[in-house]
Image (cartoon, rainbow, N blue to C red; front, side, top):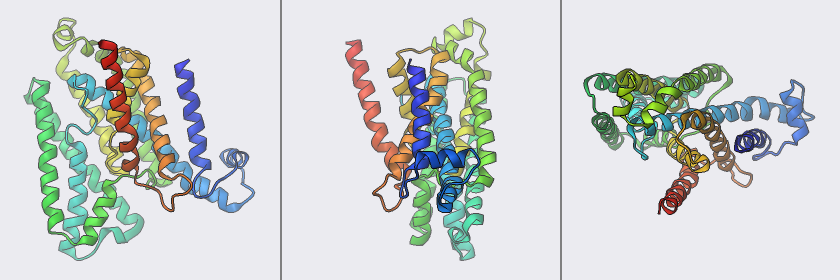
Length: 337
């Protein structure tokens, strides 16, 4: 029953995201466009095809990817505060973008943000490069450290170091470049075009499929590392696979959408609270679906009718995500008491 409800919410929010906003489009017109036809107004067809449909698909995939990344990190590190950005990968992406927007602008005397689509693609490449370099660094340390707690500390310290370097660059940069960087840091699902969506969707879908293949080792890890070792699980290899899977998902989503906060942390807690289980066979698919639902809901709230412009997605995810985590924690406390 719960699965069916989540699927219905997913379909409903998908259609709502396409139909409602600063311009409301009737449901029958949406179906006409989605089936390959034309709306009664050419502007509606353009809005659906060129703006809302790619934005909605991006939100759906990004929410699913961040949610499963959060579940994997919380299971691996046995830490309820772990999320897909806990290892500093998002900070690495931010450092790459800062080097492009803040340093390159000062050195060459022009603003990357003024180059339109070409400038956006440069930001995507810079963000992915920074995130991927940090991911390689994390993988290197994972080969040296057997203790997950130590690896977690290293990842957090990398994030702090990257944030400090970014702070120095912001301090010495013109306010126009700093503003462009701040806008990128607020996150958005609307910046992925049809030309970029193919690459984005392919990587995310492959990451989600790989995540499903890790259900069995995740179920063993839930029992504890000592028990997993006695069952013959190769813990180092499993940890490497989990780090690579979450790292690539986080790197790609951050590169294309900016650092999206809270979804990766809140959705696993929400799903565990709803289903009251630690069985990864149940949690993995439901976390993926719930992450997509939450991202679509946040995207709708961010551009609800009545707002002159779309709100930054991180503003909405924080407002919605924080009460969810607090309520789940309080509910679990009452149950355990």
